[in-house]
Image 1 (cartoon, each protein chain N blue to C red):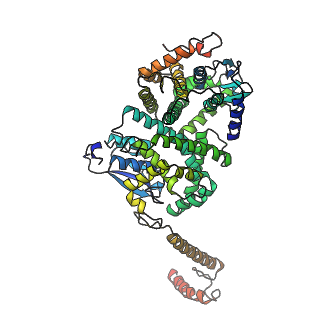
Image 2: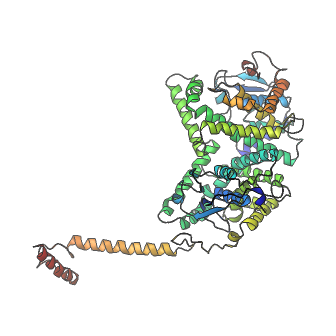
Image 3: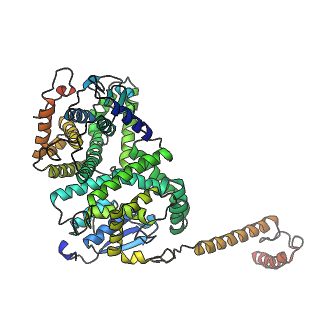
Length: 335
Length: 268
């Protein structure tokens, strides 16, 4: 259905895209990754997708990242989409000049009004962060990154929020939440008015604006948040919720069928939602640590000694006896 | 402004009509003049609301949010475009009443586009481009202050702007890319304007005032290179749009000494 939109590309190897892995029935849990994945589906770009949970393994150090042939790696969704367009995977092919201008304007609206509230809801709001975001990242990011990466990301997001709002003394709280949510609600209403009863924003086939809107709203729709004011408002807007669900069922049917318990193990180690591997690893580690402590205690106090100073006297216990004979042998060899 | 304060202001504003002695305060000429000045003047004139312009050295400190310019109407002091638009709306003067929902959505979106791209690009060019910053921006920003305060404040501001740029992902952009972004934004605006007189129907709205403010500033501010203003001039409908607004709303009211726009070269 999308073949008319692009020239068949003669490049042999497809481009590689690294993005955050999925959860809660979505192909990815990160807004920017979702945007890029959606655009790639809309434009019919054949991408080799690596879904990982470790940003250090991506070519640019952050996710999403597109590895291109000969132009290095690109990280921002904007740049990735421009690159795909250059490779003739263009979902905006049919848009008129005015519609293209409208796309640009509405994308700016999303970034300025909706994104700060999303960042607040997922990363700064204390209850949501602890119960949902930090838990997901703690469970899915591999050891030992999962100890410090979530809080580092939270710091980065809060800093970004501060700079974007122009207020360096911003603290999470009721007033900030009200301001941000008010802007976000207005933005969602405006989007809803623009979408009206159409299937996509510009007619019957999706464009880059649809990818951006989907990327920003899908998480809000699907994740179960304890503090869900923004979520409730989105669910009350029928055409936007329908829009997101449609895109999910049409373009990401496999991810939609995923349940939280199933795993897609593309990595050698498994990333379960239950803590089994972590618990076992912790158990093994603690046993090793305990053994090491006992051995060093024994060595230090002389119950067990490797180098024999007085072969007759010091070895009283049975443990020491066994080691003592060994030590005597060693001493003989040394001499 | 917090939500409660805004609601309060709106309530009070609705009670009285627009007084004759409303004043628009701005910092002294020669200091850093903000982009909002032509925007606000254009907007107020489009609403047919008379306002006198007063230049004060401490305008920044008089403003409730620290941003200049601001208006002083009756008992209230309001700054920034958003609150001022709401304030005038509460008084019964609104430019965007005639728009339907879809158009209003588009208007808000385009205003965000202008804020997002043009404003950020202007900040970038002023502060992150080393040549411009050293020759023009820093001296202009630090001129009212004695040594060594002027250097300290100028560098502090520059550092703050650079941090903001890296937070929103503009730090890695070269000057060429920024010019490219401005060009793209102007192209979008130009395509939206088309052959119309104003962006929506035949009546100007706050979007027209905002676009005029930005474009006018870019066209008349001295920078190290003229590339930016050349890019804008290449879109002829935008240029004639600016000229039209200047002609309709500014040239009839021009009075020497009171109107700060008179110190600037007009768009030739």
